[in-house]
Image 1 (cartoon, helix red, strand yellow):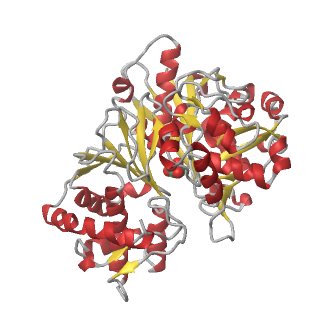
Image 2 (cartoon, protein in one colour):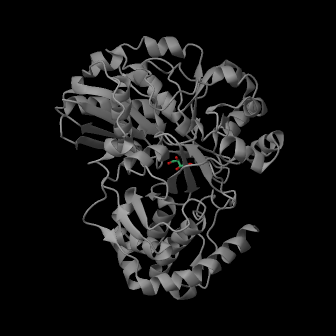
Length: 525
Ligand code: XUL
């Protein structure tokens, strides 16, 4: 048997997917999701994070909780009846941008983990900072300004690193920590991303980063796929020695450490560097050739696709990352994804069925009513002061408010993804809300494109399992083309193809410039 394990350590949950590629067999043999809030109430998170009282700008999560989840998931895998000795390689993906700060003793602790005791009992002295700032944090505007000035402006930084400075990106977060807590920073020996931290736990040593997730830091020279000395210099003192090296996405870190082998019965599986959740979803959706567009409807909504050259968003709101399949990917991230849909649903006392019924009851264009979806501070376009802005919706009933949020999200996605694929013919949808055909219909109508649903909602952990397969075969001297790696796993859900409705397409073609003007009016841009 040849099986491969992929994880996804996302904002709200840890998912594991095991694929079997024995002979002609190509199937998913295990898939499990652990929701952080429900499984680990002792960490006090809400939707996987802790939001501070400063207007929601500081958002963190306890890295110890992610380690506890990895340990719990390994136990669930061991109890599932799967033969873990057959797993040849393992990798994963992490929510992007979040950082984990480790002390000098970390390497010895990781190496010497005792298989008789749970992970969390052994790693409490690992951290110089008990919390990790995560992608929802937007408390670092001052740090972004100084980084931008040091590199020579927004365009120069975007050319160098793939993105202009963003509050949630790791450089600004590291700078804030180094300035606000210089002693703790001085004690920090290694700074990991969520992805490389989780890989380190599995490998029993400091794992490297890879270009897909390292390009979400504003620190990597995108073309050279190396740390940029100028960006490091502008961020914090002595940063170079605190960062792991950047290795190819398909390199081998090491064998999975004795802790996992003895405690749970893994064989000598290869650990491959973990990537970011969006780069991993790109693979898990089979988006290998430029021109294809994916939409992930998760805690955040993201629109992304593979691109051949690192072209930048002229509007300045998007990012270019390395693709773990080689080449590049473009992405635009909206903080107000399911968070905002849930706010509207809850404010009107609806469940998801009621939410869908509201969409079916109301006409495209909402009678001219418009809303911006900014329930929490927004990334695209940048909006620091949360609160949706409304036009023509005063006193509107719940159904119109539901339509307003979904239309606003779809219009914003269209507007801010034109630089990635101006006229996509097909859109692949994934993430929790991709289960809702009424939401997908609005996306199809706004984009005037067919929307198909990914074969699995867990595209990031499937992408990780596929990356493990690719890297292990490559390490054994077999270079399998990516099209073949994903074949049989990523064909879209055959049941669901949503075609645009021409009458609605015409309504949204008129509404798009109006929404663009409305957004501009409230952002001053
Ligand atoms: C992407 C981003 C989010 C996180 C969490 O830039 O910030 O999509 O990766 O999923």
